[in-house]
Length: 250
Figure 1 (cartoon, rainbow, N blue to C red):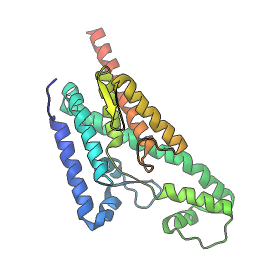
Figure 2 (figure 1 turned 180 degrees about the horizontal axis):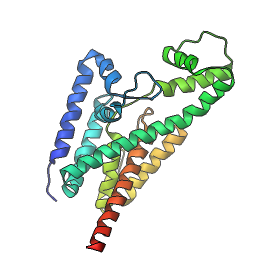
Figure 3 (figure 1 turned 180 degrees about the vertical axis):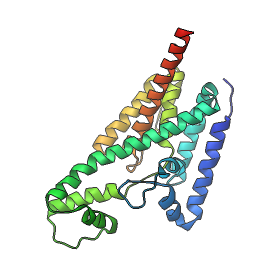
Figure 4 (figure 1 turned 90 degrees about the vertical axis):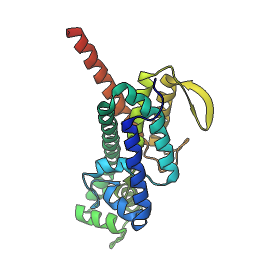
């Protein structure tokens, strides 16, 4: 396999670095976050383009360094197999899949809470005003306050980072090079990719449903990781199936 950085990976690295410099240079980061981070769709700051732009945003220097290292390490190998156009398509679709599954998970948590408030006499405009301003103008019960706090955290959540797209790339790497040996920084034991990558996904699922962080910061969007990995797996599965069908009929 040819060593070194490939074209698409190089340009993705450049775009991510430019966006990070813009984030820390303009308006203390707040302006870039309001424009380009992915907000919950019920939040007034949500814009459709954020489904794309959040993939090129990062929270701090360690966040971008870790993601860009992973993109270089795994992305270059995958791009050499796919070619540039197919790799970029795969990368972006994995990122979109990560975003949609993360938002679906948020709605799964948010909708029953909203229904409870509707049943207790709140209307949608009142709920939106409370969640937007963090201010309540009526007497509420302890249970209602707890529900509003959970909804507030989701309503005002933001998602940034290339992790979802990179998880898709990681899955592609594992399927293309299953015998390659990988290691975690915190667990320097070589493990074959075909075992390592499912293990990472299982840890993300565990953290998503329990709230317990294993190796990542507690504010990590674990379901976005799972969504990117799932999208990457489905793309690989159907692309391989189409290749088999094509050769079967030719």
